Image (cartoon, rainbow, N blue to C red):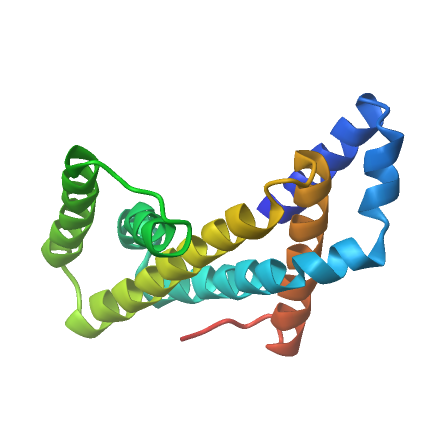
Length: 171
């Protein structure tokens, strides 16, 4: 649903701004080929979201998924050579520790909690990879064109994966 909204907003923005270059660029197959790796990461992470939520619950998933900023920070440092301050690292560690404490404090079967935590950490890692890949490869591409291409592809890939799974996503 989020991908569909993003595609609609980016298309509306390109039309409202009457940006003919953006509209032409959004139809270029080379652009779509360049965005395919990021779109695949986003699509796999969407399926992982379904797995995480269906394995144990949305609130636990949401709290653990918030640790994605730590993955983004680590990958930004390694891949993009961006430095965070000591204060930023401490805040990121605090967010991650809070999410871990929440997960630990959840009742229910240990296997359910662990399954949700594993899927949520996978989603956080995939989101970090997608964010850094996007920044690394597409920072010079028009925002609306980039959103249209990556989110449109992610939507199609995710729907195809769900159809292949028969609409049933279970861990």
